[in-house]
Image (cartoon, rainbow, N blue to C red; front, side, top):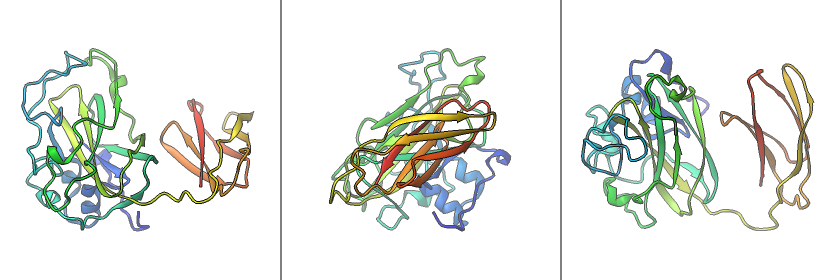
Length: 281
């Protein structure tokens, strides 16, 4: 994203939520001044896409509020909202994020209203979709390629269903080539609605020339203090073309350290519970 990227003040908004990293189509439109902050967070329609009808019961949580009507074909990107209807325009002109097949993509949501989350569904366009046509159900695979589901039931009286702000998911992308659209839908338990965000992706060829590095081993916290943790690990047996190690804390913070370094000192809060790392070229 550009160094001039704006950050939505979701805490002061009266609406609901959006994907800000990688920036959704609506987030880009807000950065460009084409929609206001309320419209950025108001991509809202009935939950349970790709169903078309209202009044459906959640198959996992029967006590959740039944759904309203999901967005119609051709109005998926806007969620059927008149403000921002241009988000439904077909074409390949949309700003895209470069990704590769099988990459794990960090997807971050920001929220501006308190709702109890039931799940997040991630859909992808079919291999042979046509970007010159509007987005319809037939343009997407019929089932999500990735889902995060909150299994707490029933939803009432449960503040632990309110998602952290922001919430980040590590989303493993499917195999694709070229331009595709990812549809991210946040479904809530305590209303009939879901929140629709489309993210435009450009799947570029993976560079498989040369030897790929093995996974590092021996990750351990060598020193644990009240405000920092010193992590150390062993180099992979095959470190050819190793560019960096990626360290992720609780799904919301990602840092990279050079492939020549075998340690990292992390400043943490007392409640921090988990860290893991990846290596990549």
